[in-house]
Image 1 (cartoon, rainbow, N blue to C red):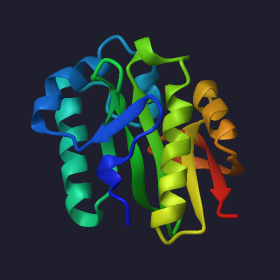
Image 2: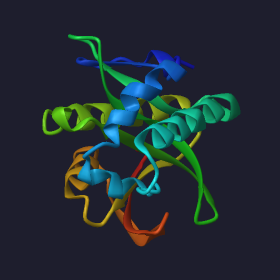
Image 3: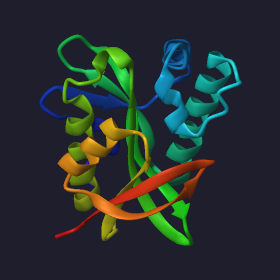
Image 4: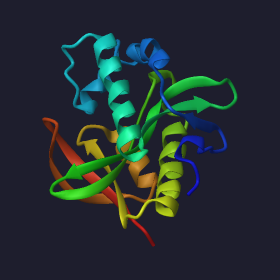
Length: 173
């Protein structure tokens, strides 16, 4: 199996998160109107949210070798967001979600789509599953566009983390 932590695309590379990423990731939660799409407690302070988010990934790395990774822009070596494959027990099924969150200044540049396609391609080569999903708030139209560019279609609507969501999926061909 190729290394999950060494995935690269034309413009992006990945690495495991570290505690050193918490201060920068806390800025993601400041003045960002899209955090409502993440199902987090928006009353918590940004540093607390970042710490919880990143520490959750450490548990995922240990449990199954997956989770959010740092998404790095190759050209500048900047951390532009977090994303990866998230194993989920969802609606009584074992699912693998393709997920991401980018800093606002990197929206609209195709990075989310490039990331999502890379995760799908890696996943179908290396993970024993017939499909990948993306769980997207019904009002998150930009992420819906990314899912569709990743050949995903709406499978069903449901509630998740207190949000009304569309669950998109793509099947192995």
